Length: 178
Ligand code: IMP
Ligand code: MG
Image (cartoon, rainbow, N blue to C red; front, side, top):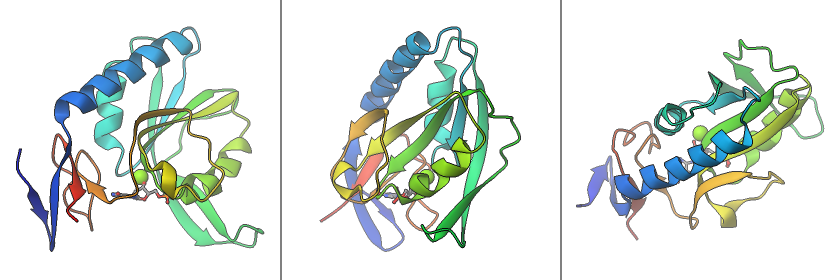
C-alpha cells in the first residue's frame, strides 16, 4: 500500500481493509449475542460513520433497526454551553435499546453534549460503539462500550473519515505523516 495525498497533506497506510473488516465482524458477533431478542436501534452519526455502519449492520443477524442522524450544535443557555440536537431522528427511542455508532471518539465533546438529550427521551439503554477510539484525547466523561481500535492521538482519514470533506472514499485508514 502506498501513501495518499489529501489536499495539502500526506497520509501513510495505517489500518488495512482486512483488519478493519475483521474487527467489525468481531463486534457484530458480540452484538448479535448481547442484543438477541432485544431489537436494538442502531443510531448512526453522520457523516463519518456511514461506511462503518453499513459494514457492521450487514453482519447483524438479529432483529434490529438502523437510523441515521446528524448532530448540529448551537449555543444554548445550559450550564454546559453547547446544545446538540439530532437532525433526522424519526424513530421513537422511548424504551428502546440504543447503540450509538460513531466513526471516531476524539475529545468526546460531541457525544457528551448529545447524550443528555437522548436520555431525556427515556430509552431503555444506551451504548456507544466506535470504530476508532482516541483514548489519549478524551477530555469529556464519555464511556465507550465497544471500540474496534484504540488509536493514538494522530489525525487519520479514510473509510468514512475526512480531512476537510475529502479522503472518505478508501477501504483502509491512513494516518497523517509526521
Ligand atoms: P469529538 O467530539 O472531539 O469526540 O470529535 C468527534 C468528531 O471529530 C468525529 O466524529 C470526527 O468527525 C472528528 N474527528 C476527530 N478526530 C478525527 C480524525 O483523526 N480524523 C477525522 N475526523 C476526526
Ligand atoms: Mg463523526
